[in-house]
Length: 532
Image: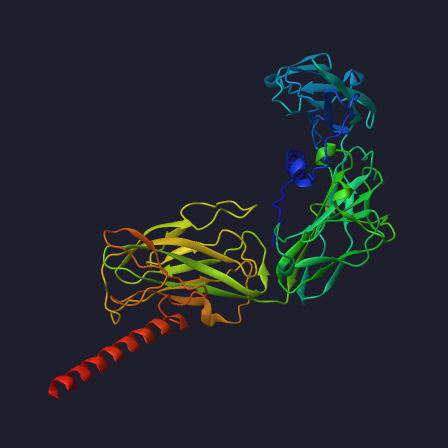
């Protein structure tokens, strides 16, 4: 199995980390910066990157820092233009300034940047810095940032600029396979610094699992286990991620691990998943985007410490632990019945459900389902029933592809977790009514198992569900098609059974029989009276 996050070379990983730092690590903690001088009056606020690591021109470090500045206001609104000054002159002779944000009204004189901003601009990165070839590695300097506007108190913040970038990387841990539910998985993260500077304020490790965001607690595949160090902070349920802060600087070239393992416990839904851990220097993102311990539960055990290892830097790539469990999932096909007459267009939701107990969370699995249409029925269109789940992409069009054998192959676009369904809405036209005994009168929906993430389905009998056309005069549940080619929703029972079958049809049939019986009895009595 490949890297679940698709990480490539170190340089691509560094660029990705810089671009997505706020999204990957962002937990809102309120705007930082200077406090307003007068609580009752209007004042500006600044939310700036506390530490700016200046990369070498070659840009080979594993972490790239960008100066991000957020500008806010407290008190009465200050609607006028805002003036921003960033003074990096203490780095003269050691850095080159590039990518000045002229779009937002910024200009540079030497290493002092001034920006005249519209009030609508609340976030910007005014420039980028590169270290010169003769710059002293790990040289530090103060870069003051000042924001002002008419009718509001000024705001000032300070950025600590450091020549060099920490190349903080993590290692892949040995894969675990055949894991029974309830197994405690101890693991010791391995981290190292391949850059040319140490992190000035230590670093943060963030641990999370392949459980999708918002997974209900009973459906989650992992839960943190073991003691909880007091330098680690745990997200409230149902989330299962946590983060740990370390004050250690980790010099370039060093590789470390923790003094004792951390642990997750596997749960019944786990089939094929992973635990990942990411690293970044502390104080390298804006305070508003950093982790706030107040939003987590802090551990109460002895703090987690570090020890050096004999590992080499070349062993560092991406931190994750692949886990394959001894578990199965029951994938069930969802079919249905078309109720209508010739020319009607009927809509049915067809697809696959996961009855568990296993839950697939691995994205990119190649599971699918095949739809074979009954004779006399043609496909008008397919569409998604609901919006895409968070964190998933719509995937390539079309939703289903007609294969040479006349079967429509529909790929499932996201992992099918326990109790979840993947269905598509099929608009189907009844072109002609085919006798029930005719060849191909019954179609089907068939589960196509994933090869990349097999379900080990122990109940293959329900992998196929019938797709039929009701005979004229058959009872319809859930609405029947209308004439003139209009659309209607076919009657699909919640369990995927045929809409016109099951216990729900017994009462109408019994009622009709009772009416016929009473009608026949009344006719006999009338004839007897006439004969008398």
